[in-house]
Image (cartoon, rainbow, N blue to C red):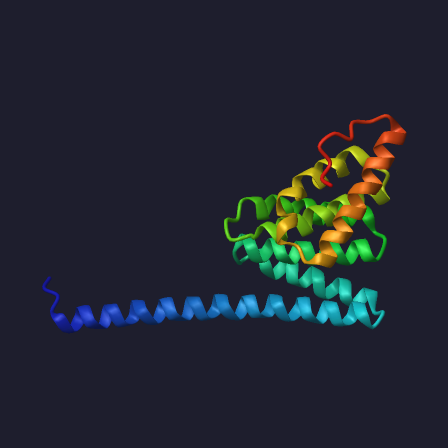
Length: 178
């Protein structure tokens, strides 16, 4: 069978259109994840916790068909929401999953890693799991330079609380960031 230049052009055009549709679909799905996240933030600030949780869970569910970075971000937002609602065990699970994905995602910034680990350390402190929190706190230290001045101040205060509590419990406080 002979294929002429017209057929090659048609095939190329069809492949181009298919690729374009796939990329537009991915972009719009990512937009949906962002929309659900934004709706979750709005609901959380207006004291509609049930609605907010639904939006955050929808963002996580929709992010599963996208890239790891988007999924890590959706899980991070869900974890932060749970921590703000004092649902620390659920927050820790979401943040642990988020961290696992983010550590394998090259585009995740040092600041994002630090914020995620600091949130996790706060959850562990609230659950009286100081040793596990200290691991997250130590891991966060490499990204402290990328934090804002206010975030850095909060991170140092959290580290001081950890240092004091670990000392009281007779546990290893070596290597905690200052």
